Image 1 (cartoon, rainbow, N blue to C red):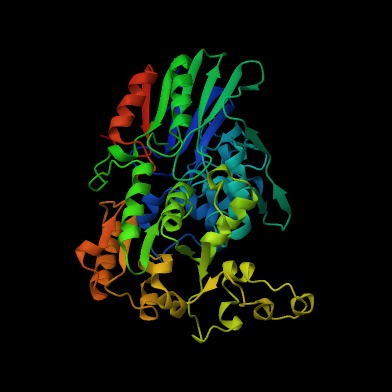
Image 2 (cartoon, rainbow, N blue to C red):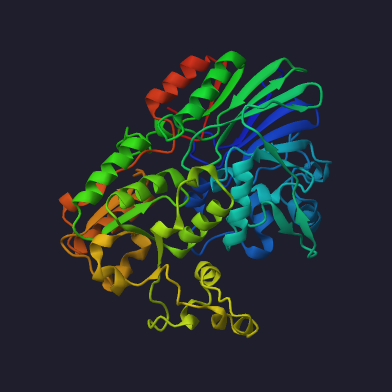
Length: 492
């Protein structure tokens, strides 16, 4: 979709696919805004593989050449970091016109709906002068991700090092839900925090007085989560706003989804309580990392049955940092209810040297002994005598005391902690009818069969992080926009 004299919106990514959202609103010639700038997982699944990915030394150009990053247009001239452009200009000229790359940035701000990678994953390539605008919660999560993660997924979004080794920090503007923010005299943006599977999800209402145009971008949201009132508040404001354009996600409308669930997050919590209460052994469970609403429901089910929740080290570290940052969705959660699973690695004997390259465990188990911290080897800084750590043998000693995270990539841990006929397995994530997702689903089933999990001991209890079709219809009807632009999902 390209802009016309009456259509100022360009969808650069996220149309007819789930994720990779990149949307441009043109306010005036050489003056535009971005809404999200995400990584396109759909394209990655199509052309990339484990050993086939953009090269580290040439990542920017490789992504341009293979369609992960859009070529700048008259709406987005100068959108990319100046150090990357200068370094790559000669190569860029071999496959496209380099002129739009060296323009002063036409994009004046990037509005981020939330911190999922498919919405912010390519922000690291944006020009250094482009400020990020988002909710306070999203800004905090981006800080946490950048601190605790390793690899490309979240590094370089808020802070990055250019090719000359100089450090840069992006400007970030925090918007308060429901409070209008003026960009000059002719533009007012009002953010409304909504509800999604990651805290901080935000919708934007944009009133362009100069061009007499009103638009709404929903980002990702749902009307059946723990924060339904937020969504209702947003919809009421959107109705009064009377938008010309509603840019709305349609994740659950496409044919790629499996049999849709219609559970609310509260109903998920009730079903979890029932299954966990009936279980006489260990409750093995998988859910989406970062889904704090689901973690609240899990913690309540565990507390209801006097169990501790056993997390991977990275999830525990993320929860710890969210509690410290006072993310609203973790209010009421206490680390006392959680433990960290210590897997066997390398030597298989639980010695510090086995975990020196596990960043999360290293961070959690960093010794307080100043003298040990002076030692050169990283493993000498690790203290495994932490009360929150738990091993496979300890899980087996008291199976009714634990609800443990477990997914397809951790199945070999069952060799050390063999499930019994008293254990149950709960799948708390979406089933997607796409080849790669279905392959993992089949592998999961093979492992469950291998360790004797019968159908009556495997439960799927999940609520989507996105609008159900009935809520999509309700929302569109209530807001009643003049035009609808559907993104983040297959066209239906």
